[in-house]
Length: 97
Image (cartoon, rainbow, N blue to C red; front, top):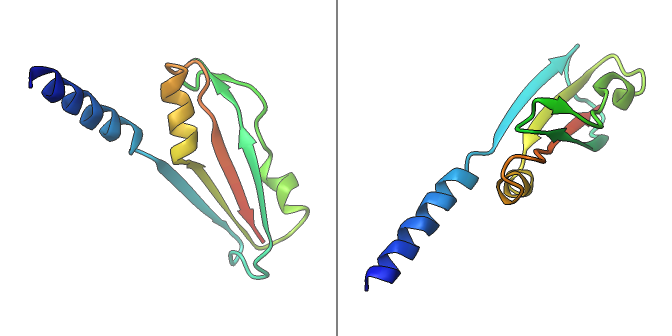
């Protein structure tokens, strides 16, 4: 019984840690109009302290005047960060034109 309780506590603790996905949204001009979406992964290392391949939202917008940028750490991104103990911490940039 004690083993089951310990496993349950560990599972609940990991679930709480992984469920903390975040997002930041920036609206440029009047925001997204056409519904075209471009998505790219960003690679960070050592808990996000060292940037790897990081996207450029202005290039992703391809010269559009009105667009929306959303920076998210999805469930999968967070799971990868937990599995690698923070060595690799990816995020995703989504640009909607």
